[in-house]
Image 1 (tube, rainbow, N blue to C red):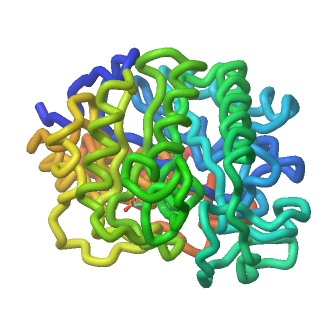
Image 2 (cartoon, helix red, strand yellow; image 1 turned 180 degrees about the vertical axis):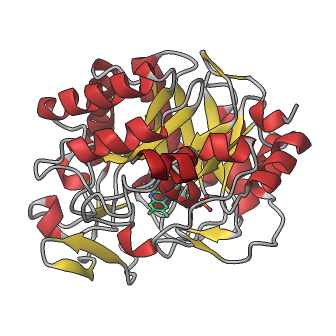
Length: 371
Ligand SMILES: Cc1cc2nc3c(=O)[nH]c(=O)nc-3n(C[C@H](O)[C@H](O)[C@H](O)COP(=O)(O)O)c2cc1C
Protein backbone atom coordinates (compact mmCIF):
# COMPACT_ATOMS: atom_id res chain seq x y z
CA UNK A 1 0.00 0.00 0.00
CA UNK A 2 1.18 3.52 -0.70
CA UNK A 3 2.20 5.34 2.44
CA UNK A 4 0.37 8.51 1.32
CA UNK A 5 -2.83 6.53 1.75
CA UNK A 6 -2.02 4.88 5.06
CA UNK A 7 -3.44 6.14 8.38
CA UNK A 8 -1.48 8.61 10.50
CA UNK A 9 -1.93 10.10 13.96
CA UNK A 10 -2.00 13.91 13.91
CA UNK A 11 -2.21 15.17 17.46
CA UNK A 12 -5.51 13.89 18.81
CA UNK A 13 -6.74 12.78 15.40
CA UNK A 14 -6.40 9.55 13.50
CA UNK A 15 -6.39 10.45 9.80
CA UNK A 16 -7.02 7.86 7.11
CA UNK A 17 -4.72 9.43 4.52
CA UNK A 18 -1.99 12.05 4.30
CA UNK A 19 -3.23 14.38 1.54
CA UNK A 20 -3.95 17.70 3.28
CA UNK A 21 -5.80 20.75 1.97
CA UNK A 22 -3.31 23.63 2.29
CA UNK A 23 -4.53 27.03 3.50
CA UNK A 24 -5.60 28.99 0.42
CA UNK A 25 -6.98 32.53 0.56
CA UNK A 26 -9.74 32.83 -2.04
CA UNK A 27 -11.43 36.09 -1.00
CA UNK A 28 -15.06 35.02 -1.20
CA UNK A 29 -16.29 35.85 2.31
CA UNK A 30 -19.40 37.95 2.98
CA UNK A 31 -19.08 41.73 3.31
CA UNK A 32 -18.89 41.45 7.12
CA UNK A 33 -16.05 38.88 6.80
CA UNK A 34 -18.30 35.99 7.86
CA UNK A 35 -17.92 32.81 5.76
CA UNK A 36 -20.22 32.79 2.73
CA UNK A 37 -22.47 29.99 1.46
CA UNK A 38 -20.02 29.63 -1.42
CA UNK A 39 -17.20 28.96 1.04
CA UNK A 40 -19.37 26.35 2.76
CA UNK A 41 -19.83 24.61 -0.58
CA UNK A 42 -16.09 24.85 -1.37
CA UNK A 43 -15.05 23.17 1.88
CA UNK A 44 -17.86 20.61 1.73
CA UNK A 45 -16.65 19.55 -1.72
CA UNK A 46 -13.07 19.10 -0.51
CA UNK A 47 -13.77 17.20 2.73
CA UNK A 48 -12.91 13.52 2.64
CA UNK A 49 -13.29 10.65 5.08
CA UNK A 50 -10.34 10.81 7.45
CA UNK A 51 -8.72 13.73 5.60
CA UNK A 52 -7.53 17.08 6.96
CA UNK A 53 -8.52 20.51 5.66
CA UNK A 54 -6.63 23.60 6.80
CA UNK A 55 -8.70 26.71 6.10
CA UNK A 56 -7.58 29.85 4.38
CA UNK A 57 -5.91 32.47 6.58
CA UNK A 58 -8.64 33.87 8.84
CA UNK A 59 -8.32 37.29 10.45
CA UNK A 60 -7.96 37.53 14.20
CA UNK A 61 -8.99 41.22 14.37
CA UNK A 62 -10.50 43.88 12.16
CA UNK A 63 -7.19 45.70 11.83
CA UNK A 64 -5.33 42.50 10.89
CA UNK A 65 -6.98 42.45 7.46
CA UNK A 66 -4.85 42.73 4.34
CA UNK A 67 -7.23 41.54 1.60
CA UNK A 68 -10.87 42.39 1.12
CA UNK A 69 -12.94 39.23 1.05
CA UNK A 70 -10.78 37.17 3.39
CA UNK A 71 -12.84 35.76 6.25
CA UNK A 72 -12.59 36.65 9.93
CA UNK A 73 -13.12 35.05 13.31
CA UNK A 74 -12.91 38.31 15.27
CA UNK A 75 -16.56 38.78 16.17
CA UNK A 76 -19.40 36.56 17.33
CA UNK A 77 -21.30 36.94 14.06
CA UNK A 78 -18.50 35.00 12.31
CA UNK A 79 -19.07 31.87 14.41
CA UNK A 80 -22.25 30.38 12.83
CA UNK A 81 -20.79 30.39 9.31
CA UNK A 82 -17.69 28.59 10.50
CA UNK A 83 -19.82 26.14 12.47
CA UNK A 84 -21.71 25.28 9.29
CA UNK A 85 -18.39 24.63 7.50
CA UNK A 86 -17.05 22.49 10.36
CA UNK A 87 -20.31 20.51 10.46
CA UNK A 88 -20.18 19.92 6.69
CA UNK A 89 -16.58 18.64 6.88
CA UNK A 90 -17.39 16.43 9.86
CA UNK A 91 -20.48 15.03 8.11
CA UNK A 92 -18.10 13.59 5.48
CA UNK A 93 -15.77 12.17 8.15
CA UNK A 94 -13.12 14.88 7.71
CA UNK A 95 -11.21 17.12 10.09
CA UNK A 96 -10.73 20.87 9.83
CA UNK A 97 -8.20 23.25 11.39
CA UNK A 98 -8.52 27.03 11.02
CA UNK A 99 -5.45 29.01 10.02
CA UNK A 100 -5.29 32.15 12.19
CA UNK A 101 -3.59 35.07 10.48
CA UNK A 102 -2.62 38.69 10.94
CA UNK A 103 -1.46 40.32 7.71
CA UNK A 104 0.80 42.84 9.46
CA UNK A 105 2.48 45.24 7.06
CA UNK A 106 0.90 43.57 3.98
CA UNK A 107 -2.16 45.77 4.38
CA UNK A 108 -3.75 49.12 3.71
CA UNK A 109 -5.41 51.80 5.84
CA UNK A 110 -8.71 51.22 4.02
CA UNK A 111 -8.69 47.71 5.50
CA UNK A 112 -7.35 48.41 8.98
CA UNK A 113 -10.05 51.03 9.44
CA UNK A 114 -7.65 53.98 9.66
CA UNK A 115 -4.53 53.15 11.68
CA UNK A 116 -1.34 52.35 9.79
CA UNK A 117 -0.74 48.60 9.41
CA UNK A 118 1.54 47.22 12.10
CA UNK A 119 4.95 45.55 11.93
CA UNK A 120 7.86 44.90 14.30
CA UNK A 121 9.88 47.69 12.65
CA UNK A 122 9.50 50.11 9.77
CA UNK A 123 11.14 48.47 6.74
CA UNK A 124 9.38 49.75 3.61
CA UNK A 125 8.57 47.32 0.82
CA UNK A 126 6.54 47.12 -2.38
CA UNK A 127 3.54 44.93 -1.69
CA UNK A 128 -0.06 44.85 -2.82
CA UNK A 129 -3.26 44.79 -0.86
CA UNK A 130 -6.78 44.16 -2.14
CA UNK A 131 -9.17 46.96 -1.15
CA UNK A 132 -12.54 48.12 -2.45
CA UNK A 133 -10.53 50.00 -5.11
CA UNK A 134 -8.88 46.79 -6.32
CA UNK A 135 -5.20 45.83 -5.94
CA UNK A 136 -3.32 48.84 -4.58
CA UNK A 137 0.15 49.39 -3.11
CA UNK A 138 0.26 48.62 0.62
CA UNK A 139 0.15 51.59 3.02
CA UNK A 140 3.24 52.65 4.96
CA UNK A 141 3.36 50.75 8.26
CA UNK A 142 4.41 51.54 11.81
CA UNK A 143 6.36 49.68 14.49
CA UNK A 144 4.15 48.62 17.39
CA UNK A 145 5.20 49.10 20.99
CA UNK A 146 5.34 46.39 23.60
CA UNK A 147 1.96 47.26 25.12
CA UNK A 148 0.30 46.82 21.75
CA UNK A 149 1.85 43.38 21.36
CA UNK A 150 -0.14 42.28 24.40
CA UNK A 151 -3.30 43.52 22.65
CA UNK A 152 -2.45 41.53 19.50
CA UNK A 153 -1.89 38.40 21.60
CA UNK A 154 -5.29 39.00 23.19
CA UNK A 155 -6.87 39.09 19.74
CA UNK A 156 -5.38 35.68 18.90
CA UNK A 157 -6.75 34.30 22.18
CA UNK A 158 -10.24 35.59 21.41
CA UNK A 159 -10.06 34.26 17.85
CA UNK A 160 -8.92 30.84 19.08
CA UNK A 161 -11.84 30.75 21.53
CA UNK A 162 -14.32 31.62 18.80
CA UNK A 163 -12.88 28.98 16.48
CA UNK A 164 -13.37 26.49 19.29
CA UNK A 165 -16.93 27.66 19.80
CA UNK A 166 -17.51 27.12 16.07
CA UNK A 167 -16.60 23.45 16.47
CA UNK A 168 -13.42 23.26 14.40
CA UNK A 169 -10.93 20.55 15.33
CA UNK A 170 -7.97 22.83 15.93
CA UNK A 171 -6.11 25.92 14.78
CA UNK A 172 -2.93 26.63 12.85
CA UNK A 173 -0.77 29.66 13.62
CA UNK A 174 0.11 31.38 10.34
CA UNK A 175 3.76 32.23 10.79
CA UNK A 176 4.68 32.02 7.10
CA UNK A 177 4.87 34.15 3.96
CA UNK A 178 5.92 37.49 5.46
CA UNK A 179 2.82 38.25 7.50
CA UNK A 180 2.96 39.65 11.02
CA UNK A 181 4.42 36.73 12.99
CA UNK A 182 6.96 35.95 10.25
CA UNK A 183 8.12 39.59 10.17
CA UNK A 184 8.86 39.39 13.89
CA UNK A 185 10.80 36.15 13.44
CA UNK A 186 13.10 37.09 10.56
CA UNK A 187 15.82 39.68 10.99
CA UNK A 188 15.31 41.36 7.60
CA UNK A 189 12.07 42.83 8.98
CA UNK A 190 12.71 42.86 12.73
CA UNK A 191 15.11 45.65 13.78
CA UNK A 192 13.81 45.95 17.36
CA UNK A 193 16.07 46.13 20.36
CA UNK A 194 13.46 45.30 23.04
CA UNK A 195 12.23 41.95 24.32
CA UNK A 196 10.83 41.09 20.84
CA UNK A 197 13.89 41.78 18.69
CA UNK A 198 17.63 41.24 18.41
CA UNK A 199 18.60 37.64 19.21
CA UNK A 200 16.82 34.68 17.61
CA UNK A 201 15.25 33.95 20.99
CA UNK A 202 13.73 37.42 21.15
CA UNK A 203 12.57 37.43 17.52
CA UNK A 204 10.90 34.05 18.09
CA UNK A 205 9.22 35.26 21.25
CA UNK A 206 5.96 36.43 19.66
CA UNK A 207 5.58 33.19 17.69
CA UNK A 208 6.17 31.08 20.80
CA UNK A 209 3.93 33.21 23.03
CA UNK A 210 1.12 32.98 20.49
CA UNK A 211 1.56 29.22 20.18
CA UNK A 212 1.36 28.90 23.94
CA UNK A 213 -1.86 30.94 23.99
CA UNK A 214 -3.39 28.73 21.29
CA UNK A 215 -2.41 25.56 23.16
CA UNK A 216 -3.84 27.09 26.38
CA UNK A 217 -7.17 27.60 24.64
CA UNK A 218 -7.28 24.37 22.66
CA UNK A 219 -5.28 21.90 24.74
CA UNK A 220 -2.63 19.48 23.46
CA UNK A 221 -2.76 17.88 20.02
CA UNK A 222 -4.98 20.51 18.43
CA UNK A 223 -2.59 23.29 17.38
CA UNK A 224 -0.31 23.45 14.34
CA UNK A 225 2.25 26.06 13.29
CA UNK A 226 3.11 26.98 9.69
CA UNK A 227 6.61 28.17 8.76
CA UNK A 228 8.25 29.18 5.46
CA UNK A 229 11.99 29.02 6.23
CA UNK A 230 13.05 30.26 2.82
CA UNK A 231 10.03 32.39 1.97
CA UNK A 232 10.52 35.70 0.17
CA UNK A 233 6.82 36.53 -0.23
CA UNK A 234 6.27 39.93 1.38
CA UNK A 235 9.97 40.81 0.88
CA UNK A 236 10.94 38.77 3.93
CA UNK A 237 14.48 37.59 4.63
CA UNK A 238 16.72 36.25 7.36
CA UNK A 239 20.51 36.31 7.59
CA UNK A 240 20.67 32.76 9.01
CA UNK A 241 17.44 30.87 8.29
CA UNK A 242 18.81 27.51 9.41
CA UNK A 243 19.66 28.83 12.88
CA UNK A 244 16.41 30.79 13.17
CA UNK A 245 14.06 28.05 12.05
CA UNK A 246 15.75 25.14 13.79
CA UNK A 247 15.61 27.16 17.01
CA UNK A 248 11.86 27.68 16.54
CA UNK A 249 11.19 24.04 15.64
CA UNK A 250 13.19 22.84 18.64
CA UNK A 251 11.14 25.06 20.97
CA UNK A 252 7.88 23.95 19.36
CA UNK A 253 8.87 20.32 19.84
CA UNK A 254 8.04 20.50 23.53
CA UNK A 255 4.73 22.36 23.15
CA UNK A 256 2.32 19.47 22.51
CA UNK A 257 1.48 20.51 18.97
CA UNK A 258 -0.63 18.51 16.54
CA UNK A 259 1.93 19.22 13.80
CA UNK A 260 4.51 21.50 12.25
CA UNK A 261 3.72 22.67 8.70
CA UNK A 262 6.65 23.62 6.47
CA UNK A 263 6.76 25.24 3.02
CA UNK A 264 9.53 24.05 0.71
CA UNK A 265 11.73 26.68 -0.98
CA UNK A 266 10.90 25.67 -4.56
CA UNK A 267 7.61 27.55 -4.11
CA UNK A 268 7.54 31.24 -3.35
CA UNK A 269 4.14 32.26 -2.01
CA UNK A 270 1.91 31.11 -4.88
CA UNK A 271 4.52 30.58 -7.63
CA UNK A 272 6.64 27.51 -8.35
CA UNK A 273 10.24 28.64 -8.86
CA UNK A 274 11.77 25.33 -9.83
CA UNK A 275 9.62 22.17 -9.86
CA UNK A 276 12.74 19.99 -10.01
CA UNK A 277 14.38 21.38 -6.89
CA UNK A 278 14.39 18.67 -4.22
CA UNK A 279 12.57 19.46 -0.96
CA UNK A 280 14.91 20.43 1.88
CA UNK A 281 12.93 22.41 4.47
CA UNK A 282 11.07 19.52 6.09
CA UNK A 283 14.33 17.53 6.27
CA UNK A 284 16.03 20.43 8.07
CA UNK A 285 13.31 20.70 10.71
CA UNK A 286 12.83 16.94 11.07
CA UNK A 287 16.22 16.85 12.82
CA UNK A 288 14.83 18.87 15.72
CA UNK A 289 11.06 18.32 15.64
CA UNK A 290 9.81 14.87 16.60
CA UNK A 291 6.04 15.31 16.02
CA UNK A 292 4.13 15.08 12.73
CA UNK A 293 5.41 17.30 9.91
CA UNK A 294 3.28 18.46 6.98
CA UNK A 295 5.32 19.49 3.93
CA UNK A 296 3.90 21.83 1.26
CA UNK A 297 5.05 23.45 -1.93
CA UNK A 298 5.06 22.12 -5.48
CA UNK A 299 4.09 18.51 -4.76
CA UNK A 300 2.55 16.02 -7.16
CA UNK A 301 1.11 12.67 -6.14
CA UNK A 302 4.41 10.96 -6.96
CA UNK A 303 6.67 13.43 -5.18
CA UNK A 304 4.33 13.43 -2.16
CA UNK A 305 4.70 9.65 -1.97
CA UNK A 306 8.50 10.00 -2.08
CA UNK A 307 8.30 12.68 0.61
CA UNK A 308 6.31 10.65 3.12
CA UNK A 309 8.35 7.57 2.20
CA UNK A 310 11.56 9.41 3.10
CA UNK A 311 10.23 10.08 6.60
CA UNK A 312 11.14 13.78 6.43
CA UNK A 313 7.43 14.59 6.41
CA UNK A 314 4.39 12.59 7.52
CA UNK A 315 1.78 14.37 5.40
CA UNK A 316 1.76 16.59 2.32
CA UNK A 317 -0.43 19.66 1.81
CA UNK A 318 -1.61 20.70 -1.65
CA UNK A 319 -2.62 24.26 -2.48
CA UNK A 320 -3.25 24.86 -6.16
CA UNK A 321 -4.21 21.30 -7.10
CA UNK A 322 -6.68 21.04 -4.23
CA UNK A 323 -8.18 24.30 -5.48
CA UNK A 324 -8.93 22.75 -8.88
CA UNK A 325 -9.63 19.17 -7.75
CA UNK A 326 -12.32 18.82 -5.08
CA UNK A 327 -11.66 15.06 -5.03
CA UNK A 328 -7.86 15.36 -5.00
CA UNK A 329 -7.18 12.48 -2.52
CA UNK A 330 -9.34 10.15 -4.66
CA UNK A 331 -7.58 11.21 -7.87
CA UNK A 332 -4.12 10.74 -6.35
CA UNK A 333 -5.07 7.37 -4.90
CA UNK A 334 -6.20 6.11 -8.30
CA UNK A 335 -3.57 7.94 -10.41
CA UNK A 336 -6.26 9.88 -12.25
CA UNK A 337 -5.57 13.03 -14.25
CA UNK A 338 -5.92 16.37 -12.44
CA UNK A 339 -7.95 19.41 -13.47
CA UNK A 340 -5.72 22.39 -14.29
CA UNK A 341 -6.18 25.42 -12.04
CA UNK A 342 -7.27 28.84 -13.22
CA UNK A 343 -5.03 31.49 -11.66
CA UNK A 344 -7.38 34.28 -12.68
CA UNK A 345 -10.00 32.88 -10.32
CA UNK A 346 -7.70 32.54 -7.29
CA UNK A 347 -8.61 35.79 -5.56
CA UNK A 348 -12.19 36.97 -5.42
CA UNK A 349 -15.10 36.38 -7.77
CA UNK A 350 -17.97 33.94 -7.74
CA UNK A 351 -18.31 30.17 -8.08
CA UNK A 352 -16.37 30.12 -11.37
CA UNK A 353 -12.94 28.62 -10.79
CA UNK A 354 -13.95 27.97 -7.18
CA UNK A 355 -16.80 25.50 -6.70
CA UNK A 356 -17.35 24.51 -10.35
CA UNK A 357 -14.34 22.20 -10.80
CA UNK A 358 -15.67 18.71 -11.56
CA UNK A 359 -14.94 15.60 -9.54
CA UNK A 360 -13.45 12.85 -11.66
CA UNK A 361 -16.70 10.87 -11.52
CA UNK A 362 -18.53 13.86 -13.04
CA UNK A 363 -16.34 13.71 -16.14
CA UNK A 364 -17.12 10.10 -17.03
CA UNK A 365 -19.34 9.46 -20.07
CA UNK A 366 -22.10 7.91 -17.91
CA UNK A 367 -22.23 11.13 -15.85
CA UNK A 368 -22.54 13.17 -19.02
CA UNK A 369 -25.27 10.86 -20.31
CA UNK A 370 -27.21 11.05 -17.04
CA UNK A 371 -26.98 14.84 -16.88
C1 LIG B 1 -4.62 31.22 -4.15
C2 LIG B 1 -3.64 30.92 -3.03
C3 LIG B 1 -3.89 31.39 -1.78
C4 LIG B 1 -3.02 31.08 -0.70
N1 LIG B 1 -3.34 31.48 0.56
C5 LIG B 1 -2.59 31.07 1.63
C6 LIG B 1 -3.00 31.34 2.96
O1 LIG B 1 -4.07 31.90 3.23
N2 LIG B 1 -2.17 30.93 3.96
C7 LIG B 1 -0.99 30.28 3.72
O2 LIG B 1 -0.28 29.93 4.67
N3 LIG B 1 -0.60 30.00 2.45
C8 LIG B 1 -1.38 30.34 1.42
N4 LIG B 1 -1.02 29.98 0.14
C9 LIG B 1 0.14 29.11 -0.07
C10 LIG B 1 -0.32 27.63 -0.14
O3 LIG B 1 -0.79 27.19 1.13
C11 LIG B 1 0.84 26.70 -0.56
O4 LIG B 1 1.89 26.81 0.36
C12 LIG B 1 1.32 27.03 -1.96
O5 LIG B 1 0.24 27.15 -2.88
C13 LIG B 1 2.27 25.96 -2.48
O6 LIG B 1 1.62 24.72 -2.56
P1 LIG B 1 1.16 24.11 -3.99
O7 LIG B 1 2.40 24.02 -4.83
O8 LIG B 1 0.57 22.77 -3.65
O9 LIG B 1 0.16 25.05 -4.56
C14 LIG B 1 -1.86 30.30 -0.94
C15 LIG B 1 -1.62 29.84 -2.24
C16 LIG B 1 -2.49 30.13 -3.27
C17 LIG B 1 -2.21 29.56 -4.65
